Amino acid sequence: QVQLVESGGGLVQAGGSLRLSCAASGGTFGSHYMSWFRQAPGKEREFVASIRWIGGSTYHADSVKGRFTISRDNAKNTVYLQMNSLKPEDTAVYYCAVRRVDRQTYDYWGQGTQVTVSS
Image 1 (cartoon, helix red, strand yellow):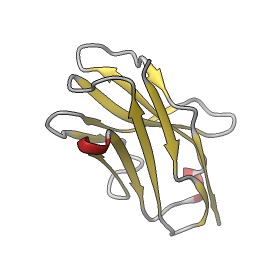
Image 2 (cartoon, helix red, strand yellow):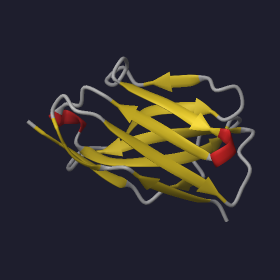
Image 3 (cartoon, rainbow, N blue to C red):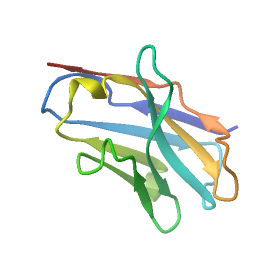
Image 4 (cartoon, rainbow, N blue to C red):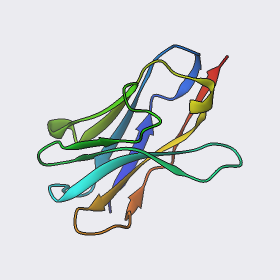
């Protein structure tokens, strides 16, 4: 059974940085995208970034481009989200998720980690 465990969230002042981690276990991910999503209170979940496990191609939402960077460590089966120049509007629960490259739906989700950016 695939498990995704996020960590690294917390409270930070505007302009600060955080690095989120997502440790994956219980499967192999050679044909998958690992992604980060976020959901703020009262808002729909939105895509943040994704990375192809093999090859490392990355995609970032326009709202975070230039500030956030997704990366992965294949040996540790871990995906990271480096978040710099954080803004109060980045406050949300951040989730990692995994899907096959030939599918549009995400099969597995983590439990989420809270990021709060104070102004």
